Length: 135
Ligand code: SF4
Picture 1 (tube, protein in one colour):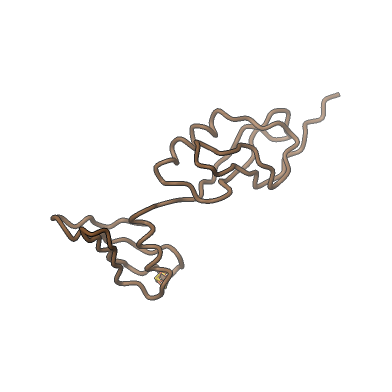
Picture 2: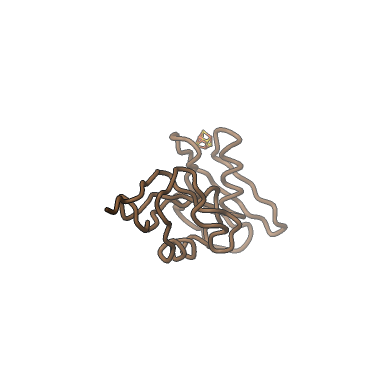
């Protein structure tokens, strides 16, 4: 999302943002009404309407990062959240990843951290890392 501008004033509240559901990038105007209803204009398809509503009421993101690996052939493994987490939990998620350490070997798809930052979403490896040979 690229929030362009929060328009001033009371109700209804209007926000302009760019839909990121496809490369076209339609400019959306999201209107929040006092009764809780939300209207979206500027979208070319229904995915834009869904995106505008979700981004206004419940913004979420998939987080990609890395995690330290103990005894691995590489010091870190790329990871991501298995699903979207609330945008407000991203900093907590990154903090948890900074503290965590996986034990080699790691296989792609392995769950390395359960319920990250209390979101109910797990962290999974997106690459395999072998165990360092010691002899
Ligand atoms: S509204 Fe539809 S066409 Fe426009 S950017 Fe979003 S997904 Fe693409």
